[in-house]
Length: 196
Image: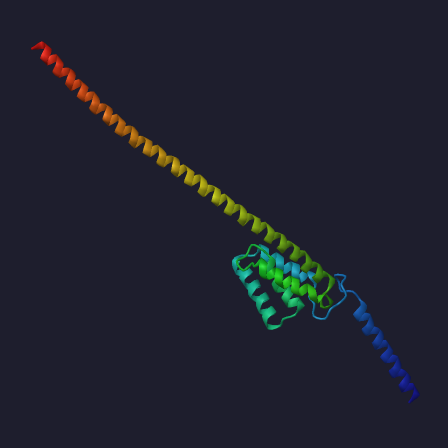
């Protein structure tokens, strides 16, 4: 009985050492292991496929990430979906929603690997910068549009002024021609009287 007890205790100690070593051993990416967390390479490969893929591949990746986030919400599935939304170059890209999701995800750092935190942080900064650039581009387009409208209105006003001047000059020319015709008629009449 004593031998059996010693064997069981030794087995438990080895199992405990094995399990504690498993929890402390780093994953291949160097992060502390989090159960169910995909390796960072999976995220990167999917982002590459999304950026380089054709529209059908992009739609498939988007649909899969969205359904994963909807059906099994959690830091990893939400991160995957947010990264897809944050990636530009496909029809479902949505920087505003990605920004909101990434901020929410980063409040749950204890449930994420260091690589996932880094990906979320990098993409959040990228999305925020993209939104600033988009906002500035919209402002510049609006400013350019207003400038173009102002220039167009000024050109239209100049054209209207030129047309008005042309009409005035035509009337003045017609008046001058009428006066010249009248003077010519008077001169002809005077000559005829002199010759008679």
